Amino acid sequence: MRESCLAIFCAQRKRSIFMISFANPWYLLLMPLASGPLVLHLLSRRKMKRTEFSSLFFLRKLRERRFRWLKLRDVLLLILRTLFLVFLVLALAGPIWKGRFPLGKVRADVVVILDDSYSTAARFSDLKATASRLLDELSAGSRVALLSPSGSLWDTVWGEPESAAERIQALASSQSGRDLQASWLRALKLLDKSRASTRRVALISDGQEYALGFLENERIPSDVEVFCFIDEASFPANTSILDVELYPGFPLPGEERFLRIRLGRSGKKVEKTLSLWVDERMVEERRIRLSEGRKEIEFRLPQAAQEVRVALDPDSIPADDQRFVLASGSRRLRIGLVGDAGSDFLELALRVGGDLEVQSVRPAGAARLSSSSYDVLIWDGATSCPFQAQAAASQGLAVLILLDGDVEDVAGAFNSLGVSSGEGFEILGPSSLFADLEEQDRRQMRIKRYARLEPTGAKVILPLSGGDPLMLADTSQDIYYLAMRFTAQHTELVYRALFPAILQRIVTYVAGEKSQRERFIGDTLRVRVQKGEPLFVETPQLHYEITPQQVAGGYRVEFGATSDGGFYRIGAEGFVVNPDPAEAFFTKIKAADLQKHGIKVHPLGASTPRKLWFWFLILAALCLAAEFLFIFL
Image (cartoon, rainbow, N blue to C red):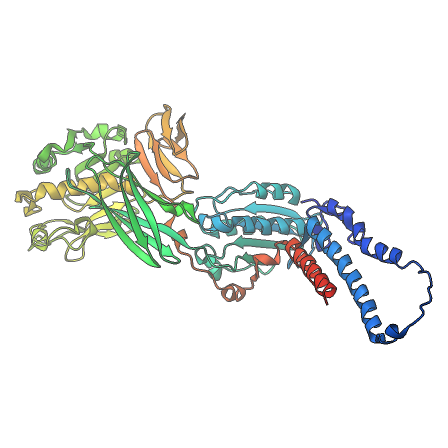
């Protein structure tokens, strides 16, 4: 924005210290035209020639006050015409009122946290204008650091306000759904090393409670001033995809699957198109009506579906109008089995139906396996976690360990409490893994002997009716533990027709849980591999090769800070990344709650320039209307 050189404002410098500037200052050169009516009025008052009339009868009838009114009208018309031209020229010059800025002109170190999450898309230009004005108002010698929740701005050193302003102008809202807490912690670390007498943090956001709610539980340092600029306008009407769910989540081979979609609507009733895409081909499209609240839609998926996308018509916030799901497809699962003579029932049940590809693996060779070798490694009969299984898990391979004998403690996963008494039996407790299992079938799953485990970090996947866990998951390593083996001494289930279906459901869960684990935009994807050979990487935007980095115990490929939703593939391992649905809940934070913690809260308008050309144009029109009114009186 160029600024005027008016003497009355003395705005000769790049950053004016006064309250008014002009977008088109060259139009001010037309300001002398406003004196035109005055010049014409003075020229019309030349001395008139005196002429005597024979009779002055009719002139005496005129009232003296009529003459006074005419003189007053002429003066008012002169003023109105002059003001009309002044206001018109000012409107063309584009006056801008900077407003009153709350930070004041003080030399300081300032960390600006600009919220660029996807909920700000509709008002992001206003947030950037606030940030630009803040930087423009800083006094000479001030230093600035810029941060944003998506990581697009992540300064580790201080910079000049001028260069920071240029970077903000080039910034666009992201698809990230992260809150501002990580940026806040980074800001405090930067200011902790600052030696400036005045240290400040300025958070600029749309005011979403999800983004700023963490501040209510944060301790504000006494030597740091915190300003929060919040958009006071209501969130725009929006339709979003809140969640998608595959049902059943871990199907048996050949089992039919459905996709449940939960939609949310804020605003008046609207009609939208919801489309289902499978492997880059649209297979179904529905026209749906949505009103304030939520609605659930269900699609039937083709058997061979792999990459699934659902999409709505784009609206005010496009990032939450599509979601991605990675289905299992028609590929047979590859199972590596480390067993012994007691694994006959287990191996037979895995091979029933021919939908799982089962291969025997020697214990010594298991350490060299990775996710490119098999989908699941099953270790049947172990007292703890064998180091070979742990090595395979470190290479990205999901591992299922069936415990037996004198089970030992596994650090970070569970403590062993011995073996069950063997008197009587237990049945499966309620679990989402077998939510579709009928009660009479669940009662057939009688467990007579099992290892009693106390979770110390692992997650309980399958509980027994008595409360002990039957299946645990150490998700940090993708290692799963069953507290029993499938033998006649442990369970009568091996004699039931339901046994193959139950076992294959468990194995399918172990194979698919990693790929279906929720990952959001901004997360880092990691894959461990055994060799350092280049791997092929696919993202929604790029396809390329990458060389793994050597780390302790092997090699690792790391794809940091995902910026787009969609399907990713690193080598043989696939991932799905979506916008964080928590960002789609549009609840405003209360300014009073922030002020209780010493945070100074201001609206965006407190630092956003206001254009006045329209108001000067209205004043010019009013002057013109008043002039016509006086003429015809």
